Length: 349
Ligand SMILES: O=C(O)CCC(=O)C(=O)O
Ligand SMILES: [Fe+2]
Image (cartoon, rainbow, N blue to C red):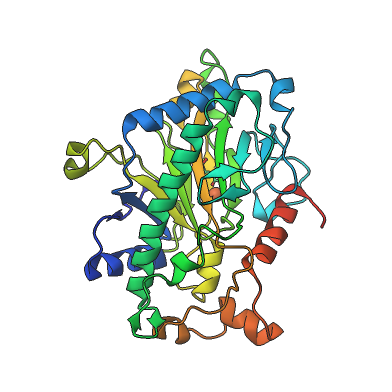
């Protein structure tokens, strides 16, 4: 298994060079990292502490706010199947999650039943969502610049941001995930080796525009199917650069481009397939893996029409252009999400 070097993009650098760099990384690996996100290690540690404590509640307590068709709530072990090549296999991934969704994006407050556990922690949740949205907006501006999206007078750096406006209702989801260790610390080496090749999150692409993820050191496991090497590669843990370390910032965020941005750009930006394999370090210690993820989505009514850019127009017969040619209309971000969630959870609409 190779370990890829992923490009680290500084979100506070709005130069043209950096805009080209983010487009290059997004159109080759589709996986990258962001620094300049502004999160300290203490803030991230607190989120993981909450996650640990929440998932260690009795299952009956967690089941009090089960996942609904609006994608908000608790998903128990084995409920969700992400393996796109085997959606009918009849069992889900060995993980559990809690989703915050239906956000008022101005305040960061989710409209959903809030479990007792989270009630006094919602300030932290909303502040995190707002801060991740700031990082998202900075990255969307860089992407618009790098793609040279055409506005009335020159490049329209706000093109994607306007379609992710705070006033819009969107499928944006903030998710806590726990992958329990499949073996205990004192299991035999042979027993542990059985889990070397097992996916704990099946191979899939994400449904939104951009996914921002916190993964802790020693808790790797996320793997991408590299569009460059055509091989599965580990997403490494990368320490903060000296510049950002000096500012007290934690390690870079892990980022992947998701379906709607791929679609919107006629496939130029890559919605790269990824999965989770339980990491050996954790298996040896019988410890659980945790991740915390923001799945960013455009407003539900946003039309996924081809992005107005020379570079995108030159790509014919793919993504949004292909859909337009076939159906005569563009689909909305909301319709796209509904279809994808339906197949993941077996929901019928
Ligand atoms: O847990 C992770 O690191 C990734 C999870 C993931 O890809 C997903 O839930 O879409
Ligand atoms: Fe994913």
